Image (cartoon, rainbow, N blue to C red; front, side):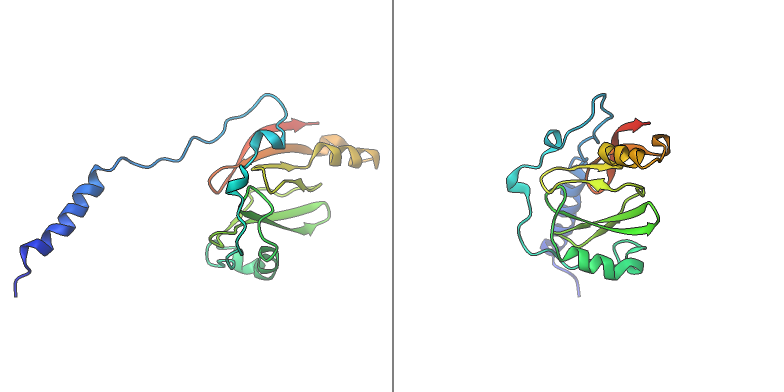
Amino acid sequence: MRMPKYKLIYPVLFLMLFACMPELELPEAPGRVTEMPEFEQHEIPPYQIYKDKPRPVNLVSHPRAIRFKDRLIQGAKIGPNFAGDQTIVRWFCGEECQQLAVIDARTGSVIFAPFVTHLGFRFRLNSNLLIVNPPEAVERAARTGRSKSHYRTAYYVWHYGEFVEIYTIRY
């Protein structure tokens, strides 16, 4: 039995329309800056802050997620605490070592940070700036006798699911 011609035209039209569409590109990642970034410079507008119930963690969205499933599931329950719709979950990985994962409250997807920290993080719900080893934490560590040269403060911007380093302080 032959398919009517009008049923064949729809897939052809779809393919033609798809082929003519321009490629969608993400905005360019932020570049390095010359002055120390502030949270206010990377503010999220209030209307973009996610207020609904967070989605359950998608444990297959990252290969390491299943290994840390209990921490991720518990952490996701608190809801967004970073960049408007992301939840940062952190845990200790040894002495002076913390890891973090970011859970998208809208989708439940998990992304692990490509770095660890010695002295903690600073972040806010209404900003996409993350500070690793904040300067005040480095100063506190120096007052206890540790060498500042052991640490590095890094400023990252959350940009479409990844951290982009924009500023660094080396001591």
